[in-house]
Length: 434
Image (cartoon, rainbow, N blue to C red; front, side):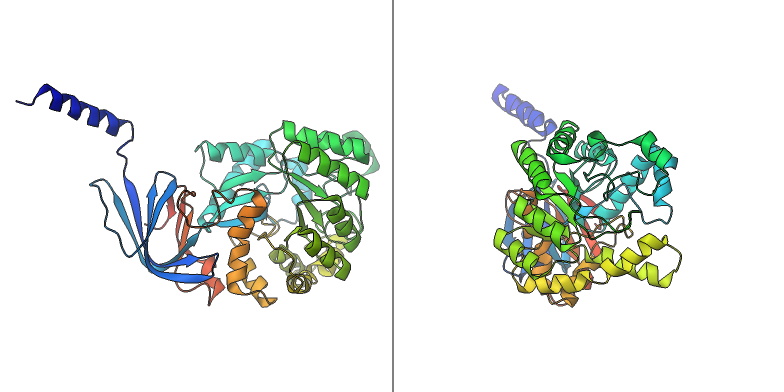
């Protein structure tokens, strides 16, 4: 007959188990583990995961220590941190009718599509993304993913992006005068002019729960305005955005194609220049000097230029001209920028092209002269630093989120392996593979 002390001990152990104190650990046996900081492969390593965190990284294949522990065999795979894309649009898909969608889709329609795009992105090995502007569904999706209601990557949301009247994010571009006057968007809808309205627009996105602010200091490609390269905000206006965002603890991502708009944004203190298509030598030097992040989105430029050439009439003429002008120059600009030591964080503009193809960007980066190791760092340690969370993201180290990807082959020799993930784990939960 058990003694009272032993009975109490057994009950205590049962109680601990029921509350998860004895929860199982997961042991990942990695044939090769990529140390992204050093750019080298470590043979035969074990990553130990407890709940959503990495609790150990050990040499050799460590045996499970408890009866409930799980072992995942990745001995024929190369394992690396979950990838990070710093420029996506989860609400969007490439479409010749995207302009009309603002009149035909309800928020619920956009939400279901965004949820599907998020899962596709996660399964492609991207466990964290920075969503750089949508209708506001992106922020709601961020909350749903964080609560575990729907699967998807960790999302940093810009909410509704901000531009000037007639700018890249003005939803009335190309409409009749009647419709422009009828809709008349203002700061709450992301259209702001002058420093005061710019500050108001920032505060509106903060109120709605955005993690960062996204502005456009130049025009864009896929809107119906006639020019995607000219500066559309003064330095004073951009500085008002940056200061208001800084006061609220938010970084500022800046969509910019033309050199003058890029230089104004850098001088005003934005966190990142996204696209940077037509940077001149002065802009590149200014970016390197100020350590402004560059998020190049080469795949977006390739995609719109290729579509324009291969499918005449797919885009309206005003867009087709811009697509060929801007899209064909992005890769060359990137090559010049990296030679000058500009800091690069990975971003693709997913939504301009099909979601899930994000890793094709690595190939375009290496074509332009970046090493495979450096390209991978842009989507891991660099991206984590841009997002302001290197404590939790970007490397396979103790204490960080268990965001883990495995591929077949050696990505340091062939970056295309990253387009075919064999295993994807986010916060200790497996979405692709074992």
